[in-house]
Length: 239
Ligand SMILES: NC(=O)c1ccc[n+]([C@@H]2O[C@H](COP(=O)([O-])OP(=O)(O)OC[C@H]3O[C@@H](n4cnc5c(N)ncnc54)[C@H](OP(=O)(O)O)[C@@H]3O)[C@@H](O)[C@H]2O)c1
Image (cartoon, rainbow, N blue to C red; front, side, top):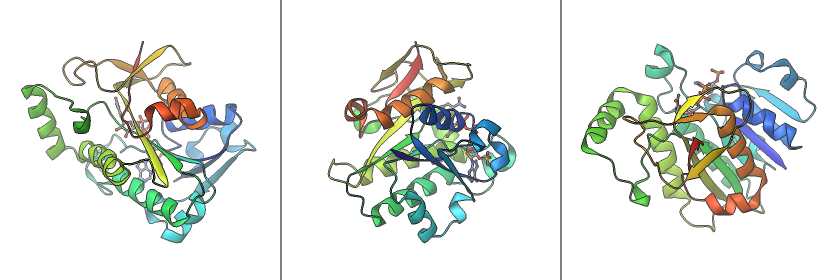
């Protein structure tokens, strides 16, 4: 299986690349700088690295990169500095998801391509009827206005949900929603739910990035797991 990972230099993205390679998959990563990847990944024979800024690539270049991929995973996120949070591109994740999906459509894949988006438990899935408290609504409303990355995460998932609502599309998707991210060395037991089981702002749980990477890899390689979560926004917590 061939998998394209974007955001591969990120704290979660590199763990995902590692796990996919460990499971025997062939991986392509589009990264801004190869130097941000660990050496053992750079030299891996089943990893091809494209050094480019994703949103600056032409449609034709993107089509060439998604051609033949069975799955695409986005672990993109705004860098946690002033430029990353408030500078351009304000819709890094949404625009990347839209352009990648358009590119996939253009390649007319024989079987649907899995698209896994790393999202956030702070994004409510209205279609699942997820309800939040008034104080949560107020805080998220403020975050949405003041912090472009939050609105970006919401819009990216909304795009997949509204554009690929039924199973007859060339793109099938799942938006994985971790709670507060932490770093741990190796995978530990984790639980996955259709909707958040705790308030991500006032009572957040923990999710280790390595578990997020492990679950995304599972979605990609295991069709039974994919069938269970396709078209949904699973929320993952460390057990
Ligand atoms: N922090 C939390 O507790 C939390 C909780 C739930 C969900 N999340 C979400 O999880 C996602 C990933 O988290 P993470 O900690 O693994 O992310 P991260 O380490 O910050 O990685 C972000 C990735 O996005 C890339 N990127 C940033 N700006 C870019 C641009 N303008 N063009 C191209 N690529 C760009 C980075 O590339 P470079 O290496 O080139 O900068 C990097 O590969 C984010 O969407 C975040 O919102 C976070």
